[in-house]
Image (tube, rainbow, N blue to C red; front, side):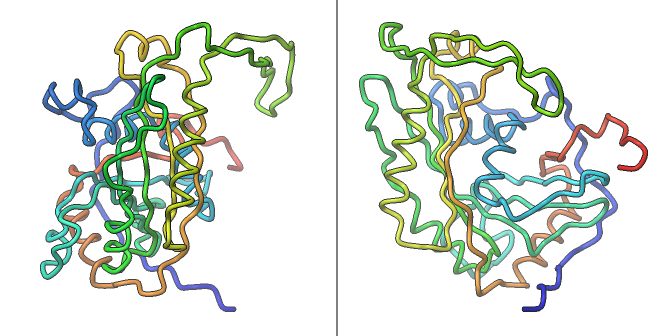
Length: 282
């Protein structure tokens, strides 16, 4: 089978790169305090390492060129009518993710992600969102996005310490992954439990094979607990998207044009820190 031809668009201006600790988004404080969908989604975007783990779950087939400037541009909560004026459902698109290499958008790899927030707790571990998001995901497929997924992002409190469990700990010695001293820690396993449980419900309920599915623990609901775990990542669970058989090139052209005309609306998440020099030979 012949490889599919890449559908790309060159650009001249790009979003400013925002380094760690930089100011990226502004939201009303109330949305953050309530862990609203917008706030939790933006927390995921800004945590580039966690976002990268999530992206690799839902789109493992895409491989960035390490020796080149590459990554993804992310647009959050965009109205559908900006791209297709005759389409009303869904009313907005939670995340549009477009890979890039050097000065080209790789439009045929565009990914649309429908996001739902799961506000769980130790006492209510079976908490589900009001909607799974599958109907919105199907609508995104009907629009003609090449890849589409549904993500359930989890926010929760901390378990009481008598519910914590022992976990093995290993020291990583070098960039090759060599392991050193072995130890153990007593850890709150609630995030892992929730990720597994939420993904199980997602995969069991989904009727659309084309949709990627993602379950990810994004943050603790208590600010002090969240600060304590600020450097910790709980690995997400997911399945990859299947390529849409009915890609809409008009939609892709509209997305490309929107990026070219309004690059500052997008968030740059590069495959590596652009401030680091590429070693000779790649």
